[in-house]
Length: 164
Picture 1 (cartoon, one colour):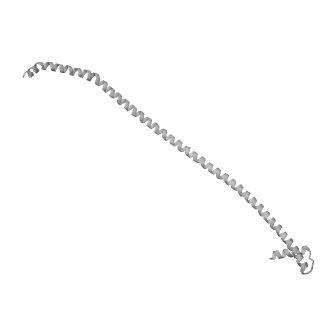
Picture 2 (cartoon, rainbow, N blue to C red; picture 1 turned 30 degrees about the horizontal axis):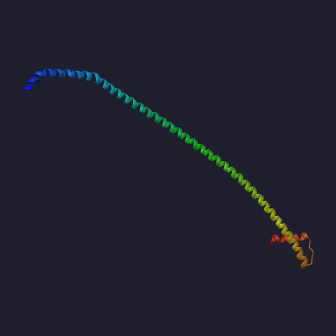
Picture 3 (cartoon, rainbow, N blue to C red; picture 1 turned 60 degrees about the vertical axis):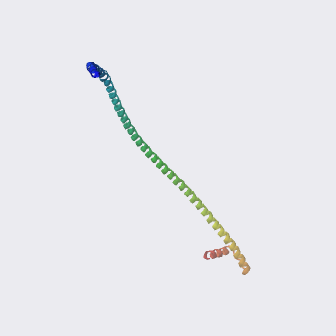
């Protein structure tokens, strides 16, 4: 077999060139490129770690700000509730004052109306007594033929009206 015989002749030169290529690959890629790749990977890991730390720090600050905002919001809500309660109390006291004023006016008008009614009643009774006294004098004059004075007729009418 001529191929095997030829292989033995070129065997040593093939091994030589194989070692030279592997050496070149080792030094160019292993010593030149791999450290740069490893350094780039390390930088990326460091960047990712610092980005995650910055994100966590930002999240913590946001949580603190949210908690502070919620506290301020609750305080504002409580202050608004107090203002509303004060306004309700103020409105209630003003309404009570207006109601008391209106009640006093109604009471005053009722008293005035009762006084007018009482005056009208007295006037009506006086007129009725006067008419009844005149009618009594006229009836006594016609039936008995007597003249009675106005005071006696009014006295008799008053007595009859008081006793029913």
